Amino acid sequence: MRELVFALDYAPGTNAVADILAANPETTIRSLSCHVSSDHLWRVDHVAGGDDALDELTETVASAEYYTDCLARRDCEADWEADVLDRTDDALVLYSYWTRTPSCTSIPHLALDHFGDGLIFQTTWVGRRYEWRIIAPDDTTYHAFRDAIETEIDDTTGVTFVRVGDAEETAPSERSVALTGEQDAAIRAAVDHGYYETPREIETYELADRLGIPGSTLSYRLRRAEAKLAEAYVAERDPSTALPSPNT
Image 1 (cartoon, rainbow, N blue to C red):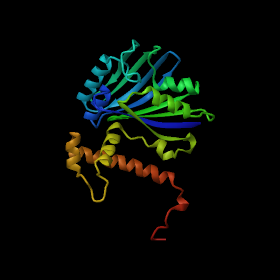
Image 2: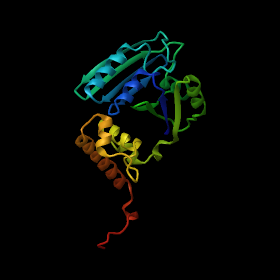
Image 3: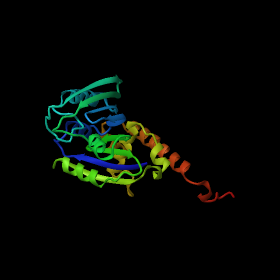
Image 4: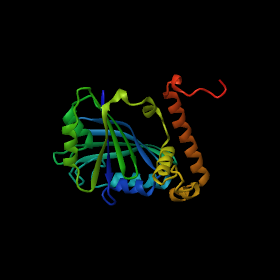
């Protein structure tokens, strides 16, 4: 299997969901499943974040002029619906169903047009960055698909292609580290604001203020995320390559 990883980056005011996520750095959207046919798209997403952000996202998605995954960025007269399948104080599961029209398209539809059936889609949306991972058969070539995306998106959206390669070459640690939405948002914010730079560019309490959460909460989320990443790194390394213990 081969994979393509790329990200869309939305300018302020061009996508209502991206604007909400940018204003709520702790909030993330991850796909649980995404399926496409020639005329339809349906998906289930897990949204993690604060109660107010979840309320705003639910209302915005239900009342938007066009479907979130539509690349046309206009009212293309498509029929679509969005329903909340589950809801807690800090998470919701959102189901979406969209009927394609001749004047609009989506990334899964472009992939279907270029690669055929049997595709796997994974998405993560944090802030203005909407990252896609597509897994397709071994004989897939991506050049025409890349050109199609760049043709479809408008000037308000940038696209960055991160990786093209064999899916099995992806390190197991990259595939298996399962951070919660809160942990993922915390560690991304820490990296973005220079928390891990030497010398450190921002202190924990300052970063917590930016995120609107208590410093103790941020510290806990960072520690848990760091522990998971460290465990995955150690599990991936061949023990025979490790440095000898000082006691041996």
